[in-house]
Image (cartoon, rainbow, N blue to C red):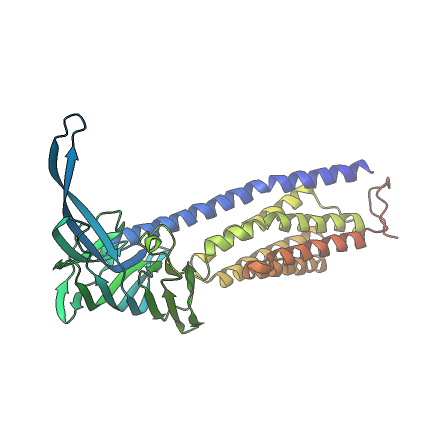
Length: 438
């Protein structure tokens, strides 16, 4: 192979590797901005309320028993009697639980960064049926108390002092203390007072719940029968958790969703644990994460540079139009600058607009430069058209993540096929400085 041709190939490969440095710096800048966005979201959550998980309502029964114990000494046969007090607890799930609400989503901004707060305006209703536990064996029941408990991740999000109606009587929540093994979240409690052992109880309850949180709302279906219906004008919900809606409709004007969960489908103990995932959840997501999409775009930067350099190289060997390595480098830097422009513009305007503006700026710059470097506007326009196709394919990949591998594979196949077709009769062992296409 001609040494000059070999040196040019080595120089192109070296510059392609060197251009990984600015691409890595740009990717680091994107991650830094994304981290800053996350910090702003956390800061807004600390100032208002964080992601919310609702567990309950449930009834906690606490009772104490005095046990009498008789012991016989094996050596003397002496009989001694003693007593000890044992405390028990029992958790009662509602026979039925209904939550209906409307969610409003608010975008708060600090500088160029945003966070989304949701405001849930809901009505909670439930019914409890249970038998108070009788004393065990010969034990003496000392006390039996019942407490209504609702758990929240962040009680700061409760917008008002809800009035709880229990069998027609009005009560108020209090910030009581509950054993963390029973309710790991911050509890709101209503003391139901002393109840009688062995007696059946049947009561209904209802209360309004106005809850504010950040980004995510999760509800644990603690009831034997659960019905949750939520609606919102937010058009981009992400339904998650262990239970998906039985019915849902999502459109430009918002969403409606309805869940129906029976006790056969959920584990009560896990539903009381916010870390178990035994809940239904809605994330009020931003449909276009500019930092995530920009980071994905940078990963295709090497492909852009390699394909462009391949086009330059083919132009050299086929048209006998030498291109200086410095010109390769300048065009490669212009391609890298596209990704920096993309993240800068996308922080101030819609991502598609930012992408189009950045692409047009780089295509015009490179096309204008190559018009002079290659000695004609047609050559510059041809490279500009090729770059336009590359940017179009990349935008399609970013918009359709599911087809990213297919589109990228087809692009590489087309580029390789075009290179093989253009050089199928090229004599790579020629000794002269130019190319020969016979």
